[in-house]
Length: 99
Length: 438
Image 1: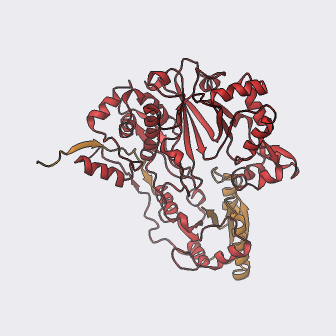
Image 2: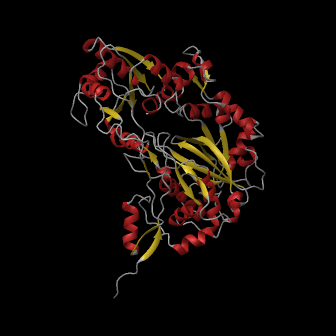
Image 3: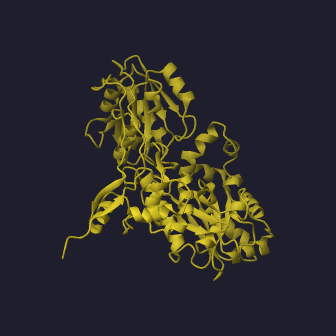
């Protein structure tokens, strides 16, 4: 018996878009005296978690001002109003909780 | 990612540990592989404030390092690769797979996660060419773009790529215009949600009979080649043309969903329905051939017949059993459709939809406490989006409507062996012409 015949077939995958690497924001030298937004993505009790994190900052880093901020709608929608506010009034953000 | 990349605000993203691979992958395909991400244990949902404080005080389950140390470092430690600049790279795939034996290729397709783990028909040049001959469209014509979630980038596909997946599913060339129309919807049958949703596809018009689809006995079951192959093709083309459907990476359905094997694909039984066909309700002519797609299919309620004395209570009970986040689609055997006319006087589908809209109610307090309502509707209500904003003002014991009227639908299918019928929880997406893809 000979070797089984080799078959040529087509690849079923679609065409991936090119990925453009985006520069990330420069990091802060310190959080002391800065305003950190705790951004609630409004998903599965994320607010409860972030308020606990806010309490942690109050106890351990009282020099950091924290602002608890729920996004304006559901996480599926962009929220330029909230992002503009954070850029104008804050120095950093913690967004959560993704799951 | 938007706030970091577009607004220049240093950001840390928090996730639960089950989302490790998917979170890192999404950051990478969005061009931010160095995005700072910190993980806490799954789940967050339902945990008490004290339990969640323990997460904050505890360690990242993936790195073993203190969560808050990682958070603070994520905001203050410079990037090693900062200043590298903009880099573009593509991930193009070759048109052909390296030639091999049938057995090895079957294994390769399965191990590459290009299948539904059942044997496929290998897409040889000859088979794909035969499929392509069933449409006037050119092989390199772009059909659409698709993605598994809102967060991921959409992949693009051509007529030939759809044909490859149609062959794999075992479809006959005469089914190809329906399969192309499904691909043209851009609605994935392999959406990635933790809720394990599936799709549903309803075919209307002359194409149903031209390709011998089954709208009668066993229409939603494995008893017809066209129903089975078109549904399977919809799933395979979705997972492959959108760039994959891999558990833990591009598929996060916690339990999974058996409906996904053929995406609940069936034709409406227009000949035995007492009402106008679904596609005519959506602006097409009876002589047009179409396919309509729904997403979010998980919940099903069923019963037998429409009883004379208490049918209203029975149907209300069924509706109350549905999760109020996803609207109801009444999937009625022709016997039941006529019973709805006899019992309720619903001579048109719209009249039945009006009744469902008015009668699907629950106390406002219960409605707003559903987790999915909290996740997806409550945020909209709090920022004034109607009708949710008005419903949010209701007293906790006020009976409010569970669904928006325009989201409720009715489809007739079945062989009249009895009057069983069901309600599918499903979100209508769109109706697409099949004739445009012949």
